[in-house]
Image (cartoon, rainbow, N blue to C red; front, side):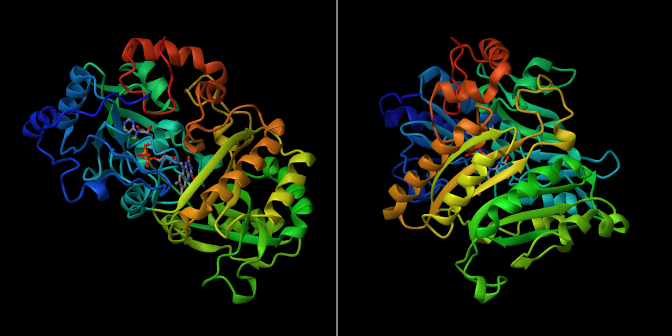
Length: 466
Ligand SMILES: Cc1cc2nc3c(=O)[nH]c(=O)nc-3n(C[C@H](O)[C@H](O)[C@H](O)COP(=O)(O)OP(=O)(O)OC[C@H]3O[C@@H](n4cnc5c(N)ncnc54)[C@H](O)[C@@H]3O)c2cc1C
């Protein structure tokens, strides 16, 4: 993945003449803006950024990078913590202007351009009382999240994002354009569902959309407990989740209560463990389904209420604007052991900054009933996708938040299933990528050899063809 020498200006100007969208280079005034990614700790200088206007531009850019042997980066919404979407001396295919959606409410599908965020899709689906399973914030890109798997509020009810992907349009390494779905290029379709950006540039996705809650309104929100109650809360939670109906999901975490409304002032800055719930079933059963949750423990705050799904999905967006410093580590957990719970309390009590946090997202219910080898996403044993995120606005604190995340991960890792979720890891090397795919790795290598034997698409959690 090491970048080649800087690209000569003449070569870049040749490309500029063949694209319909703008090509932005170091001499352009908006260069510093377009090279920024979500993680403010990443500061890379690409050779040029191609803001593609259509599929033809993507084909042109792919052919150009291959012919001139220029490293090729692909950007959805630029949210990956490792900043894979912008690389030094690379040509970046940037989808930022490609954000249209098209819902078919009768077929219950939504076609989505590769530059969309999940907020775009929630907005489009929400008008019809529909939703597509995605994540837990609305600012993440559809492209990167989908290609890595996608765990979110609707995972237990409706499966991972990849379980709802029907079709993808893809520009391959040789510049050809294909549609991958169950009938056409099924091997590629299998690999795209979890294997990341290794196999081609996806220009659009078609997903299933589902009715959720009552006309798109779910019942959700956080319940927070004092960090001193962490042992009791985590033990109760790990026993409860497998007994719940699929349409009730809740992720658990350790965090600091944000210092502002809507949180009550007396809780600002308090270290807590919390569960954010989402009930996406019919409201006439809600009291019965939510009773065990409402009856448990001594919460400091209970914010579970009816709301449109897009409101829940975007509830934490404001806390996590673009440009913060991030360092994160991930692992999948098939169980939450007593030892792990001890670490959650310990590291929860010593959060290095007010935004740093740890979350465990369930991969159970509908997601667990899909066979482990049905898609490239390899962890289907009813566990949790765990992420430890050191986050702070101040670059001077990057060392501190990184050290906390690394230490927490080192202690917790022996209790994990061995690998992590590719979308929540930094650039951690080949072994960690292999561990993320477990038994599916060899098949991914085969597909990679077929579709990208020279590893043109290598600025990612890379599956090495050799
Ligand atoms: C605040 C925050 C919250 C998150 N919450 C969740 C969550 O709840 N659930 C979850 O599953 N994940 C979550 N994530 C992780 C998220 O899935 C990844 O950050 C994902 O990479 C975001 O997609 P993107 O398009 O913005 O990525 P980018 O950074 O643009 O790209 C990521 C990778 O995908 C590749 N890629 C992007 N677009 C394409 C394309 N069109 N074709 C081929 N390859 C492409 C890139 O080359 C790169 O390797 C979260 C991330 C953040 C920062």
